[in-house]
Length: 46
Length: 469
Image (cartoon, rainbow over all chains, first blue to last red):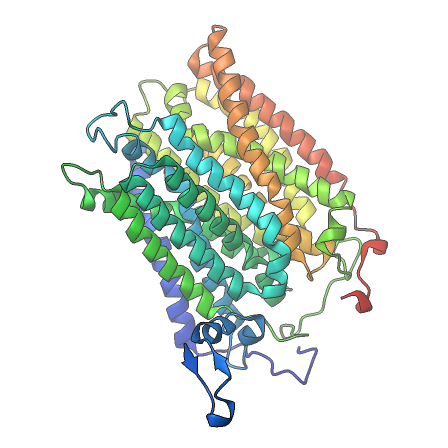
C-alpha cells in the first residue's frame, strides 16, 4: 500500500542480482567470523 | 575547484567538494522505484559490522603493553590499566555522540550520518596508528577513543530510524538485523587483527600501527558501501498491505513525540533504567567471562577453552539480537523484556550451582541464554521507543537513551570486579566468589522487571500536532 500515490513506490522486487551482491558482501565476513568462533569453541567441549 | 556554466554565469563557482557532499543530503537519498527495502539491512550491517570491532579492541591490549620492549613490557611501555582507558573513552564518546548528534541525524538523514561515522572511525584508526608509532598515548586516546568513539556513536544510531521507517510492519526484526552486526563485528575483527599483526610483526615492532592503518582503510571502505546503498523511503510510503496497529493495549502509539519532549516523560526514564539494568548485568559477565569459567572449573578449563567460551558468548550476543527483537514483533516489547528479567534473574541465581555441580555444559548453556538476552535488550529497545514515541525522532530519542549504556559500561564491570575482590579478600574461594555477584545481578534484573512493568502508553499531551512538525 502506498499512502501517497503521487510518489513512486519502491518496488518489492528490485533487481535480484543487487540483493544477492548486497547480502553476500555482509554475509561472507559474518560467516567467516562464525566459523572462527566455531573452531575456537571446540576446545571447550574436548 | 570545478567551474560550471557559460561566460554569462562564470562567476558562479561551485566547489566540486560541495557537489560531492550534496550527494549525502537526505533529498538525494530518497529511494527510486527500483529499490527494495531489503537492501537497507545490508547497508546498516556494513556500518554495524565495522563499528562492532570495538568489542575486540582487547586483542591489542597485550601488544600495546609491549610496544617498546617487544618480548616483555619495558619500564617506558604503557601499563594494561592505562591502555584500558582507550576502550572506556571510546564507549563514553559513543554514548555522548549518540545523544548529542541524534537530532542532527534526523535532519541530515542516514547517508550523511553514516559518512560522518565512516570518516571518524577510519580517521580515528589512522590517528591511533600515529600515536602507536610515536608512542604517544594522548594521540592513541584521541584517535581511537575520541574520534573513533564519535564514529561508533554516529554509526550505531544512523541506520536505526531509517530501518524503522522501511519496516513499520517488523521494526524489531529490522533493527535487530542491523544491531546484530555490532555484536558480530568482534567475531570478525578479533581474528582479522591477530592475522594482520602476525603479518606485520618484525624484530622491532609488534605490527600494531600498520594493522591500525589497514583496518582503518578497510572499515572506511566497507562503511562507504553502506553510505552509497542506503536510501530513505519516499514520504508517506508504506509496505503493501500494511495497516498500522494503533492500539493502546499493545502500547503502540499513533502519535509522535520529539526527543526534547520524550526526555520529559517517565516512560523515557523507565526505559533508560530497563536498558541500563539489562546491560549492567550482561556486561559484567562479558568482561569477566574468561577468568570466570577458569576459576569455576579449575584444572578442567584451559585458557584456550576459555577463549572458546568467550567466542560462544559473542555468537550468542549476535544471534540474540536478531532472535529476541524478531520475537518482540509478535509477542510485544514489554513481554520480551519481562522474559529477559524473569528468565535472566532465575539463570543468574542458578548458574553458579551448575559450576559447583561440575557441569560445564549447563554452565555454558546458562550463560549463552543470559548473553543472548543481553544482546536482545540492545536490539529490541529501538522498536520499544518507536512503539511509545512514534517515528519522527526515534533516532534522536534512541541516541539519548544510549547514555544508559555508557552508565552500565562503568557499573557492570565495577560491580563484578569489586564484589569478587571483596569476597576473595574475606576468605571466599575463587570458585565461590561469583555467587554473591550473580545474586546481585539477579536482584538488578528484578528491579528492571518492575521498571518494565511500570511502562504505560505516553500521554497524548506530549504528541506533536501536524502544525508543529
